[in-house]
Image (cartoon, rainbow, N blue to C red; front, side, top):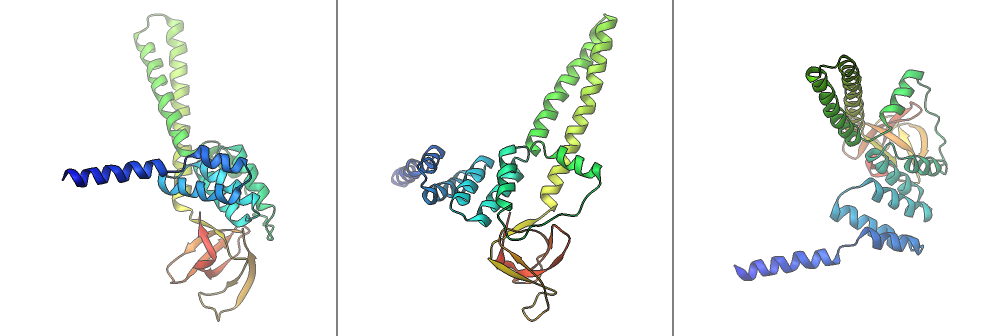
Length: 248
């Protein structure tokens, strides 16, 4: 039993010692060894869990190597985890500008666009954390209102408490809205150089149009083996082989 425990501890310590650190991966990137840096970031994601910063750095590596589809894929994954990060949004825009298909999404009502932009100012966790902090402060304000004998203090604390409660409600709605979007909106990036979009899940079906690597698609149906029905940002939809995409 002691020998087994010793072997286990030795193995764990050995794996820990060999694990790549972010500092080491960053150093490789700084030396312009982008392929090695990408391998290091991928290892970090596999062994230590996902993180927006790692996906972002990995996207930068692929962008430097001119692997635009992989750059877009990792920027998109970083954006899901940290939608309020301006660097991620900017680099994603630059990368998408290098794709063949220049997609123009259909216009939306002003209020819808504003709400989407607002809810993506922060991540789900950030909205939730902000809501908790403000909720505690609002409770303290209302407690002051009930305990204070000073009329002015009571008015101020009551007003602050009510306003903060409304902000907490807005935080919760924003967090839920973004969480629902992430959970229900399955999206992917086209990785194949060029793909013919079909009218049905069959190689013999009619070709509707051609798409190229780096395009973003919304997944509509995955029930057919080897095929996925997708919708594109400009509204068109059809079937493509499942091997042609990588889910975000």
